[in-house]
Amino acid sequence: MTTDTTPPAILKVRGLEKVYGSGPQAFRALDDITFDVAEGEFFTIVGPSGAGKTTLLRCLAGLLEPTAGSVDFRGRPVRGVPRELAVVLQDYSRSLLPWFTVEKNVALPLRANHVPRAEIAERTRQALAEVGLEDAARKAPSELSGGMQQRVAIARAIAYRPEVLVMDEPFASVDAQTRADLEDLVLKVQAELGMTVVFVTHDVDEAVYLSDRVAVVSKSPSRITTILDIDLPAQRDQIATKELARFSQLRTRLLSEIRHRVRAVTDPDYVI
Ligand SMILES: Nc1ncnc2c1ncn2[C@@H]1O[C@H](COP(=O)(O)OP(=O)(O)OP(=O)(O)O)[C@@H](O)[C@H]1O
Image 1 (tube, protein in one colour):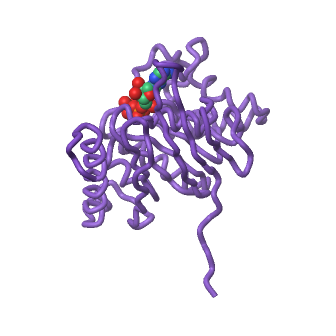
Image 2 (image 1 turned 90 degrees about the horizontal axis):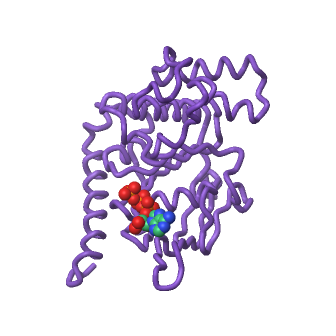
């Protein structure tokens, strides 16, 4: 007898389509996208610029209504952002409330969910320490650099301890060392909380390093062309993991898949 050990799907995406505008101006951004995200997995979406990754993530998180198809979270249709889900957007300038201090921004979702006051203080302090911003707690977001503001947005998501964390190129505006530290922080928090992460990035190395599976999307109208299992040891290390021969193989596979799809769209004579 075989036993299926695959965790159940926490998110189910079926036949998702998104058309922006209407009539002759209509633009089909997503076309018939179907996949599942398993509970506890790190699922990453990569693809060329303008492919529709942000559109897909926004539909998935309930921030944007699809034109057709469905997204289910634990079997319930997603309409608006589910309570159990936190989102870190690419555009940090719009994600923090400018009239609140850093610590109040981090505490906001906890207060909205009636978490006891002492616990809010402790979770806020801990999350700011994890992103290296304990000294910025009383500052206004406008006093921080772009990368620091993005770390506040990450601290807010971590303090909330969501079941699903949705991140759209969250590390694009931070320097290389901070980026590596934040990647490891997200992996650590994911392991501690058993959290599911859905992540978008341009960066193939980052995708391979972080993920359990990576989905490649084609140029608009975007479709999923491949979902690759990242069969690297679960314990990741910025140096040891990236030195593995398997890491290079997976990276090359993803890069060639993305190039192949871009060429298929831009060169009419190219045969897939
Ligand atoms: N509100 C909108 N109205 C019309 N078209 C839009 C809108 N938002 C996005 N698009 C178009 O949909 C396509 C997909 O955009 P999206 O931002 O989802 O891509 P992306 O893969 O996230 O891009 P990038 O990697 O550059 O961030 C693009 O061609 C974009 O111009």
